[in-house]
Length: 302
Image 1: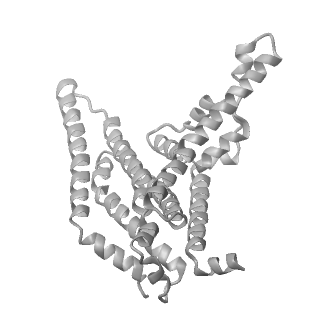
Image 2: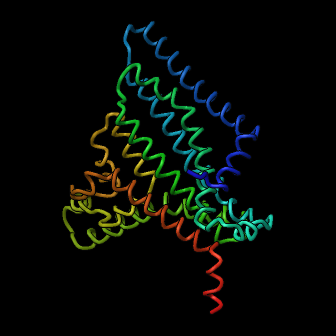
Image 3: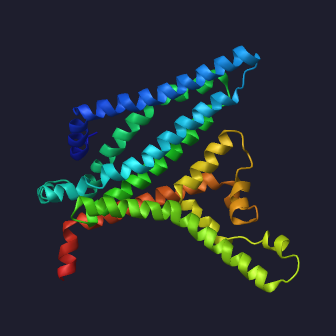
């Protein structure tokens, strides 16, 4: 099978970079230090109380998982937002388009090179996550779901960055827009639900004069809750808390945005959200391919 030339070039340049090795060392040293300090505190507690709190080892898993998730969500747009616009600034994009490479091969090669770098960082930290296996509480299925969440957020944020990098000519603008859209998805969907809940409670107060507080507690954000399906932060929160032992974590969403009926969407929230995020990533990639396609200009001239 022929390797994508763009991917091969990007990954070769990245692997020869001293910066990548330095980032890997620093990242894993910080995580290892936190894990060792956590384990040291557990040992000291055993010496003092003769009791072992196994929840402390689950906290190690949760901490490492959260750090990697944040890293993926905020670093992936930075890695991809300058991938295509950088080629424009170096005046090499037109040269790439004159080769036998198709536009989707260029986009895919750029995305996979950035994704490969982040995947290497995630996999290098997995020995620290596997510390939890020694004491139990984390299963292979949990790791599989965690990897799916990582995959979805990395592809979503990475494809978002490469999409705006293809649309805008300047890397700075592409980076700003990428982070702006990411904030809208992460914080905007939350704010919309809070606003909808406030309006619903206000309507209840204006409608009923008695038992206002109890009736207002029954108000909810309605169908706006399902906007959180595109929010990777909400999905990761549901997933990681359920793995940490909170099997009723969806009740937290209800406590924030009012009681919602239990249905198939609520029951399979994580799986559906991952599927929707991957679908959004595919849309961003399709838009990126269309943006750099040489035939686009011909159609516009017609």
